[in-house]
Amino acid sequence: MITIKVKTNGKKFFVPIPYGLLNLGINILSSDFITKQLNKAVKGNGEDKKSTFTMPPLEKENLKKVVKELKKYRGYEIVKIKDKDGTEIFIKL
Image (cartoon, rainbow, N blue to C red; front, side, top):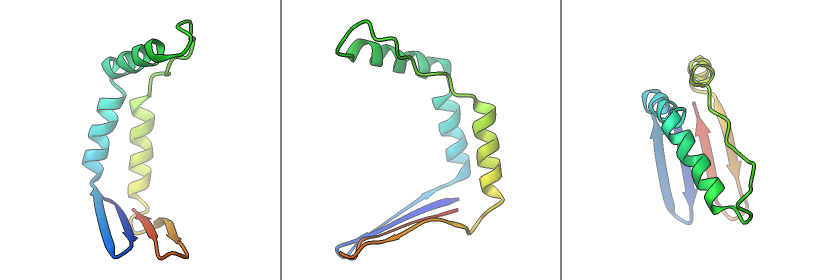
């Protein structure tokens, strides 16, 4: 599980992201339907309608390998930021 903790001005936020939910997100974002919709939105909203930018398809297998590798490093802190104004951000596997 990836945990994100944010502390700022006396407020604390904690967001747990289970690996199963991360895999579900990978399945959704790598689907052909989502890729087509994103490309349609980028092409339709561009300043010049002749934009040639297209989002490349995400390879589900490669992204799942990344998540599988992340599971091996449980407990490892990826991000640990403490600002002078008291804001703190932690991201931990």
